[in-house]
Amino acid sequence: MSRSSLDALVEALRRLPGVGPKSASRMAFHLLQHDQEGARLIARALESAVQQVHHCRRCNTFTENEICETCLDPQRDASQLCVIETPADQAAVERTGSYKGLYFVLMGRLSPLDGVGPRDIGMQRLFERATDGHVREVIVATNFTAEGEATAHVLSEGLKARDLKVTRLARGVPVGSELEYVDLGTIAHALVDRR
Amino acid sequence: MSRSSLDALVEALRRLPGVGPKSASRMAFHLLQHDQEGARLIARALESAVQQVHHCRRCNTFTENEICETCLDPQRDASQLCVIETPADQAAVERTGSYKGLYFVLMGRLSPLDGVGPRDIGMQRLFERATDGHVREVIVATNFTAEGEATAHVLSEGLKARDLKVTRLARGVPVGSELEYVDLGTIAHALVDRR
Image (cartoon, rainbow over all chains, first blue to last red; front, side, top):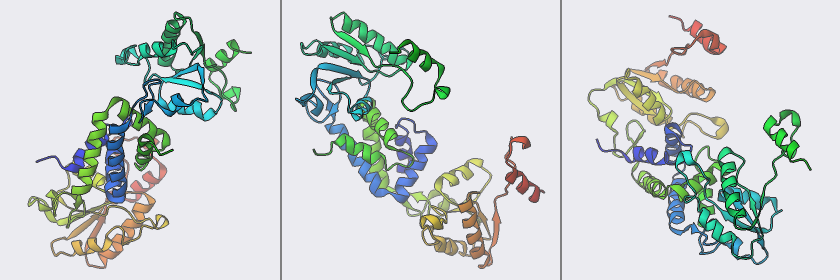
């Protein structure tokens, strides 16, 4: 029996991160039964994104141009460079409205267990970008996970060796939270980093 | 600023059931950064499924032919018709290996609050299918949710009015479970339906 295009669709949807066989079936069923227009929309959006989205030659984020809008913006402070893991993290920093410098997007983090080494996250490109003569301070804003911290450590060493000022986002108690419900590691860090 | 194809992709992925803005971003990022082949695969699978998958003219399930393989199988007992909500439920019943009759797939359930009425779930088509002269017993296997139960009730009334024997899947304690951890409603039903 040849595999039906329904089975092929369920199989394909499992390529999405966090989607197992049950969710994939549910998605396929929903699209075919209730939202064929949505199915066509997703197909077209995927095709066009794969064709048109590239990496910015300066900051490595996703863009459809050679250099992204943020990097081209003359209002931004070229002396500050914020290093983040993903475009989603960049969007989070942008939403705060409190950072006016430029970015470098690693598109990943060091993860030796998964075979992700310095070359895979474009560390050399970051070093070249950071030593363009304009950058004075590199703010390492990788995530506060084990892998993000390890990445931050390796990056900092390399950047300091190139005579750059390197800072890290402050760790501490989240705004709006009550100490009673904050984990102990966070409180300990907030004590050490108290101002 | 024209909307980028990345934004368009995130927007499109939100049409998938259970996918919010964060998951959609994560999916788009994953596909573009790590699995462009997967992105193309999903796009092609969607296009081809939307084009080729139709409803079986007899049982209403998804198929690429006019009549699905199950309905065409001469080994199946044409005197039994099992009514289920979705192809996923049908697959679950099939996996038990303990049912040899035919199916009718509602492709939904009655849900007045969501505006899903008898016409939307093809109830009239079920009545026609069930009165083909071969069907002796209709096994109503809609889910044991409020909506599934309501659907079962309405179906049963209509089927009984057409002089068909109507049965419902047994409710009871799941195999392998300990009474201590089974909810009270289930135990109560198991007592009422005791054999």
